[in-house]
Length: 200
Image (cartoon, rainbow, N blue to C red):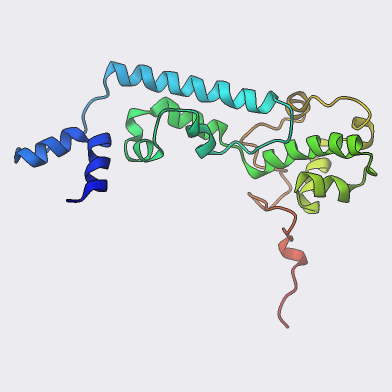
């Protein structure tokens, strides 16, 4: 009578369901990963890595590389990966290396926004760059200070975003400038703790 839970069990653990319905003792020990599952795990890990590289290299407005975005390019449900991570050790590790931090994403958006501001004919100011990039002014200052990007000079020539990020030592899991006390950052509405009003 419980159609949805039964359908989920049929898809994700039919072996257990059959044993439960037959009255036979259910397995409690974890089963071994088959050779076929190991090959699938390796294939999935390679596929998400290739896809992430394509997203980084492609033109247009950057989109953040999230875990869900990576899984969307695979015939695999998140619930299966979450409930049986031992079946996908390579994929789990690869996603951990490809899931983009907000600092890395902000750096990519800044480089893209520099070209956009120039293309649209706007004045190349930090404010205009932050608006186009949807990045807070605080993040813009910290990233430019860390990378020593001369956005004025960069705006007058094509920007190879992957090359510039690699030159600055920024990868997908970059945790931000060493001097920063914040691990993650928000968008334009972000305000550093030291600048927030306090109750008297």
